[in-house]
Image 1: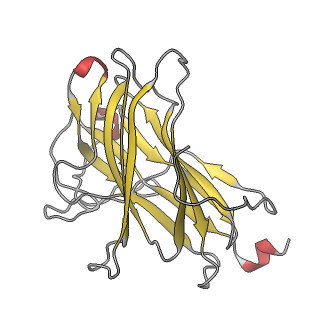
Image 2: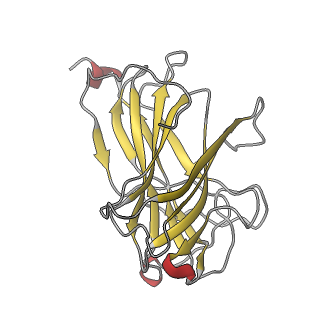
Image 3: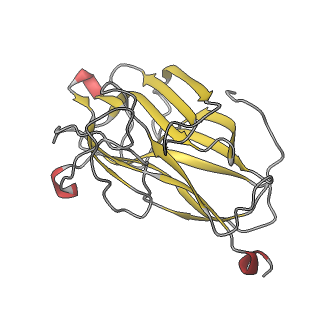
Length: 228
């Protein structure tokens, strides 16, 4: 089992999940969702409590073709969200197996502008002829919400992140074309304006055959809701 640290799972409050949700990206162009059928999203969890642990799935929400290889980077505030565990996703077809699943986490001591300081890069590939279809998830990310800051009613985003044009790429099954960024949605489903410089949370790639990246994150419960 792949992981960083393991904590006891908090089970004292109900968790609400909303799908789809968005990765935050700084460089993607405006586009029409109807023109692009491949959507990759980070799950959103609501009514989280401080000190609790929550799993966010990195999911293929819809796909024009199954995804066989991926190299994805997400960013988050590592002072508020502690990365606990990273696990490979599951496929409906048990005959297909992982040929590669790896991840690397970096936490910068200081932030650059408004960019989150925690960076998680996940790479994976499955057997030849296999791929991830709509509804299947690529990876599961477990986070612990910090107890050291007052976070009531706050939303803690987990967003796609680009340091260059090669980040956040996927390859279709059968090696039939590469998918990169078409545009990016925030966790509410609103499109994020593209930024033509790096690093970025929505790169300005005019690739209409690319993917839509939908950011997610964790919403912390308000005090009055926590007392109910």
